[in-house]
Image 1 (cartoon, rainbow, N blue to C red):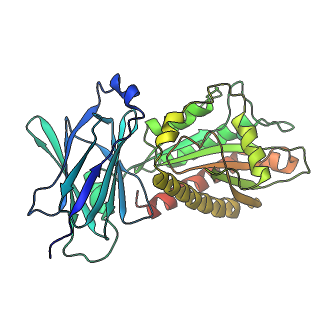
Image 2 (cartoon, protein in one colour):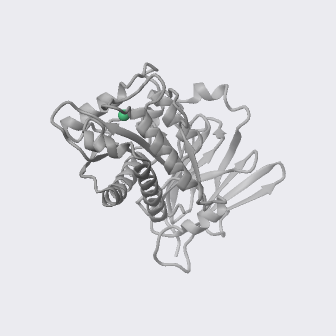
Image 3 (cartoon, rainbow, N blue to C red):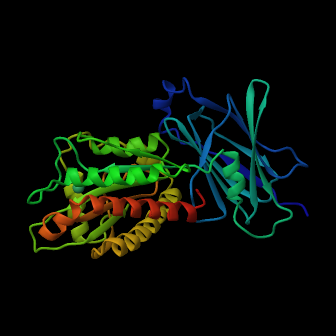
Length: 376
Ligand SMILES: [Zn+2]
């Protein structure tokens, strides 16, 4: 059967071209993209100046495959290729950030996608092959992708909220910045015992870190998951319990969440507010939505385990426009561990036993999430 004639459209967003001009130095270069030769399995051939490294962006849509080539730039190119590739519907390439090229491949039907890399003369060739025979259903083969990326290891960033001159909320005898650090350090100990996971903290001592720096750090280390840890306080009533937030693009899910985001967004931070406009402008909506769905999954796992282990009240999973979560195109959640304005909960949040317990909860939740996302 002859496949219908398709168009391979290579589009590139030049929003960051200006930035790129001076920054390509030192990066791997994506030099050409072509459909594979007729007669072979349908696919695409990429040529790089050196060995390409990539990570897979988790998506729920099994007809779409998104890969990020890391430490890679491509010369601004804009062309469309005419080719006969039945199973491939479209292909998009974007210089997603200064050193990341994002490939989105849309398939016409479910198929296994295999990736091969090999040196060829001065270049490295990466072949992406859509295997149409032999497997009629199923997800694109993530195992093959993982093997190709040398993966099986995931990167987790734990973010202890506030720090240094930014104390966060205050209880009678404790400060938010100390609680968040104690939880992050306890969690790190647990994560470090698992050789499959690389764990990073945005701070491991009492120091000030700007909000934007926290998320860009997660981006830099190519995190699979970002968890920001906070503690709550309020003068209204005497509430207690755990809240978990994840990013909303549309705004807060309720008024209280909006105010909470406002509080955390302004916490002692005077760094630039207009950063990431460029990144936001080129965010691929589909990927962004999927990242939010992934974050929601992680939030649900975390809330279930957290409240079961600590006996704390679940106050809800909410969406809000937290700045610390915003620029990260990585599944991310923010945990308000409890209210230090509530004296009973303040005592709980100060206990080393509690830090160890929720450290374990964080670990188990992230592992469950990564496993379900095919990243462990
Ligand atoms: Zn906070």
